[in-house]
Image 1 (cartoon, rainbow, N blue to C red):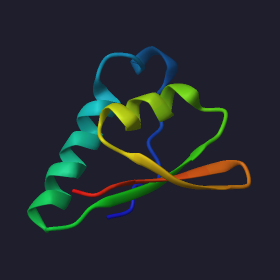
Image 2: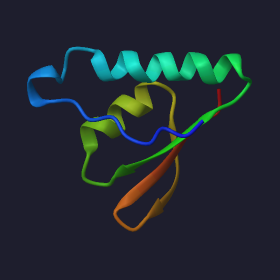
Image 3: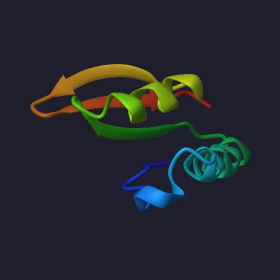
Image 4: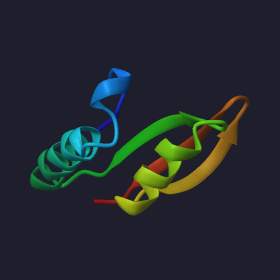
Length: 72
């Protein structure tokens, strides 16, 4: 599974919405026997922390982005 984009309006951030969306996608990936991968900007530290709390690990850096994966 590839997580392409999650964007929340400023007033909707820090309420667990993004976490819930990602956890739902992780559940679907798990049921399919798959992991997940994504790219996140180097300067988006808050998103990186969220992904790390959800079990994603950095696999490489590509220009302005870090590649991360969740093994499932």
